[in-house]
Length: 189
Image: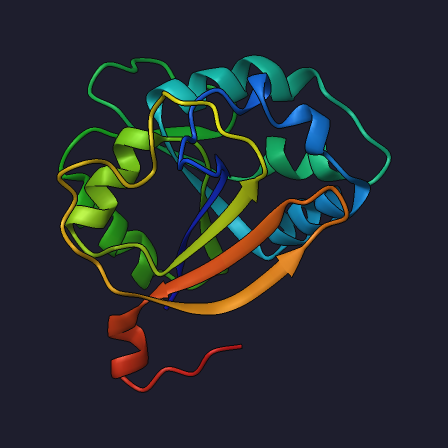
């Protein structure tokens, strides 16, 4: 079964919104390799409309010598939206029941399904217990306000820390899985 992996840039105060405004000073080439490896063990992206539109406006014009941009462009994207009409950039729209469609996607053969950005979609996935792994790339900065990955009013969700990785810039990746997986006998890496 495929995993839904939520991978986010976040601040120390949990903000995930507008990382372009605060993450730049903390970028390190090792982080680029981490994101490269993460992308290449995934074979689909699951996005909310706002994130999809931002990515679709930027990525098709990007190039690099390592194949990251080509992978981003060619990978199928599934966009949760009730308003998106004519998707491009190798995307299809999930217009009906998002939870049911994600369950169906997880049951198909393949690699991880990667979620980036997409704050509202993540809330839906969490409500339906569909996130298999959280990779939080925590940046050493406090921004004070913005959309948070774990919003006020979210249900209590026990998580199991399964990995940490530190980068020279002070960014730490914390990888968590819902504790339900540990209870079911799945092993950690």
